[in-house]
Image (cartoon, rainbow, N blue to C red; front, side):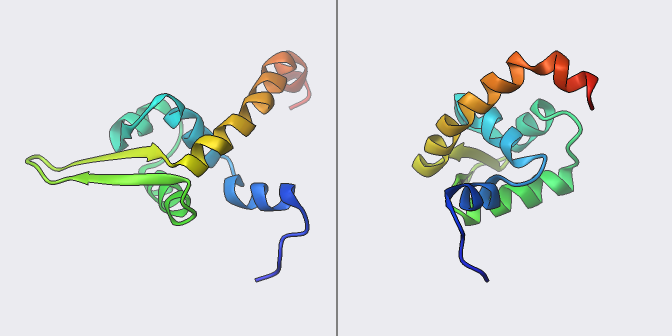
Length: 107
């Protein structure tokens, strides 16, 4: 595995792709169950959501909590590292919102 060349390289490696930033954004307001996340993130398949959550969990961005009860309950939440990453996404969200019409027209 090659070393990162800069901070942006490292950050892009962690949140690269279509779904990871949206997962992080959905978890911004607190823990969510899998079904809640799937409803919140329009268009994501169950398989893709599972894969992306596992990758974020392996990087210590997302925490998976299993509650041993009937029926079983699993919640996903941001770790401290994940919360700090979400703070970094706020200016990106602001920029996207400010330029939404222009970006849609050039899509």
